[in-house]
Length: 119
Image (tube, rainbow, N blue to C red; front, side, top):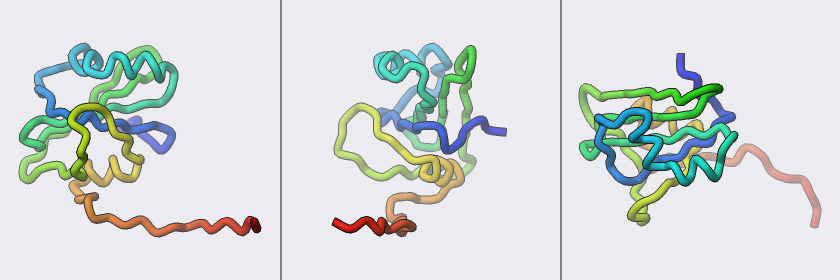
């Protein structure tokens, strides 16, 4: 069972990563960011150049947990971003949809709440 949930903040690392990297190699790529958000429930998702392997990494009491998903067919589809390198934030729903093979590029989320506050 995955230990990931809605209480986590999901960051997608935009540059392709060598999937031979383990805990130390992957955490080293986002070390500065990890230091800034220490103590928060963060998950970093790394993808390879072919976009058929994904490694989510997160801190859980006492150490890092690393998940690994390799697709037998197809690729993980992420929206296109103009940023050359860095991190973008994904919602829990987006992360699960990506892991399930759903293309989130053209997904439209309907608003479920309207404020009744008067100006």
